[in-house]
Picture (cartoon, rainbow, N blue to C red):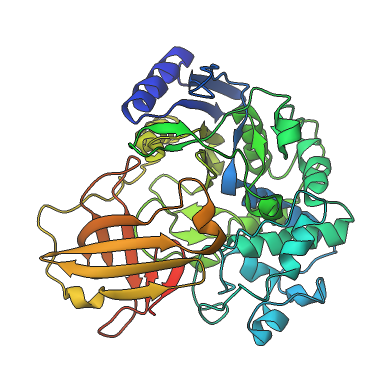
Length: 454
């Protein structure tokens, strides 16, 4: 097992190199857990990060929401292949056929096909999720045929959270606490600013006007997106408590069954192929990312909120898990730490992140060029000599989020016939974009989300 001092020193080395203000990491193999912390929770106050500090876990929350749904399946209250409308009769997106037919399974594995990055704020009340779902018919444009393609969809997970509320009679937050956090003995967990202030809580940090990291002007995203990852805040140890339940076949430390073994297995079954190359998984399961790495299988998820990022990787067959929480800076610079830990503890070979080739392949750049647009994002791809300039602009409420309010301009070259890679490193990696289409021109720019050609 890794030594605590060695883990702390390696975390500090990488965090300093990639300008990460504060971070915590926890590593588990069998019954042994090692934790380390680095830096500060807030650059302005200098309050130190410790292993019991809480950070926002972002979209790793989606696996918690998926776990709640699978509990309802275990109880006979939900059917993965039933339409959402069975449980939410008033559910509407812009496409009436999809409103009537999209299933829980399709939402769990991001193949519903409707607009995913809708961050409308419906207030802090207990009806925030309900109001969000009721308002989907306006902005939830259908991007492609339901079930046709994988495209990350926060909105779909809010819908799943609303199903949890309806079938349990609880708010999503209360269901998460009662059905997961309490049985697993979690002690450092919050789902609102009012709860978080009781703990050593991290502030997010975003680039300021001069590029230097500054404290984010907002701490949390809207409660209406909570089931997708806007509010859950916890310690790295509680992150591992959740991981251990999934490793142990759904059983809590005291022997209480939280989830059936059948549901644990079902969540790890591939449901959709993920386009492109880079840090995302090869396939998506029911909530989990599924990484096809030598020495695996490996499951996990990443998360990001306003200036905070998180990572969870699990090698179930080896009883190994790694969790990392950070509050700004070059998060992907910690990829090497994950590589080292999974290699040493589980014999897993984590592939390197893509880098620009010395000699880019010769491809027709016209395949990539053009304008792409959805309700929440627009992009312009223009040829500049032998390279391409890609300018991505957020639209709507997403554009108002700190750190997301300005267009990003990236010079890229082909990595292969369907993928572009940035020439300059940002946040510890070289950004990649995938383009989908069988003809002479791409039909989608896929940057985790499918953005149709305009």
